[in-house]
Length: 573
Image 1 (cartoon, rainbow, N blue to C red):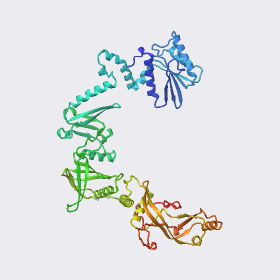
Image 2: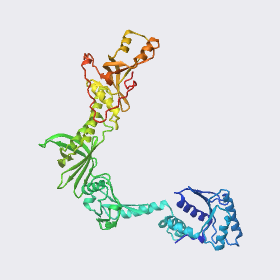
Image 3: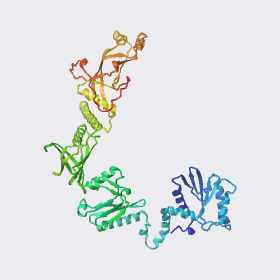
Image 4: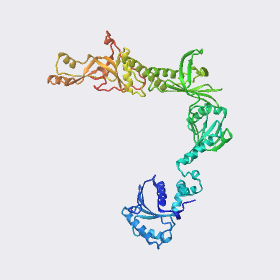
């Protein structure tokens, strides 16, 4: 069934052509529809493509424009001449009829003797062909033509003559009919981009036990992402509470067995399995105990169940603990228990973060465990050892050290905030230096390779000896603060010292002193042998001899922090 072009009127004709032109060209260029037929300056629709500009003139001449219709031909000629002002590459006449040889010759002759614009005609055949390629447009306009007929037969609702209101009424009625099919299951139906999606929904948590439904699919996962294969094993084998999407390429045939009304089979279907909400067991308290070789409890952690699941191979339990999330897969027989554990320390206090690290380390080490829900044992076994490689061990050591250092520094400064999500290398070094200082150790700071002072202009024998010396002992006291996560954590007065320093560019300093221009001059001291200044945090009544102190290595796994060879050190001047 097609558009009845013989009986169409200009406004309706314009709507159809405009919609069709947008569909054909909107993704390749700019489509502009000019309002006001007749006063349009020779343009009804202008299509601007990267390499050309087209002007379309819409004339709703159902029965053509033979020579006897001089007024119609004059109107076409005027529209063509008006369009020339815009210098188009192509001028197109759009009509809802099939042109006779005489009419076609008339149109082609409009541009006779001129190189441009090129003249073309979009007639009834062209319109029918394009509408066939965009069937939804054709059906939309046919629907409008049938709307009045639907009213005559009292079928407005069936025809959806009332628009979205009627859609809602029909969908609600259909949903109610589907809900009455089964006391335990229902289907949620959606139509998206020409595809009907059916979502099987349980009406209560025990639907699968009371009215079992099984899915059987035949496919080939060998070429699929390895992650997809593992996901199928978790979801199908253990009922894991996660979304599983099988693409049509992996599902050659799908069969569903259950209540009579639900049984069906399909080929190359996409299968999407989504966890129910709320998940079974969600919110229950879980108790995970770690056991020693004799079965005695070493430590106990309480968490909250996120989901319980059951599949063809066994059971799964997903539990959230402080700073960590654990999934335990407990088979009915055969292979031992497996587990997945992830940690996220961001936002935790240092105490909670250290607890989460202890918990994670016990799981990764392959500890024996017992899991209880509601006071009942649901799983016992041994976690598989993760087998950390050197990089994993170094990363874990670095993470634990960071949290431990932050904990010590926070308690010393009495400045408490959550563990940040990211830490820069320089911040990590600052934090480590602060921790070692609080612990009463001497530290060589990679951030302090020089020390600068500003001269007040007064000359003295001490200053002269300092400038002329090849190396003297230097010490000073500064207020030290750890720069970390956008904060300053005050450690307190710190002694900065080195047993042998020398003045940079001593000749310039001496010249300034001789000329009486030393005021404001910056004198820079640098430790010998390209070493770093040492820091020490003395306690009250501390009588430690600085000469006996040996710098303690930072001991941070990974890249060494940079050594900014500049007087503008983070300690100030």
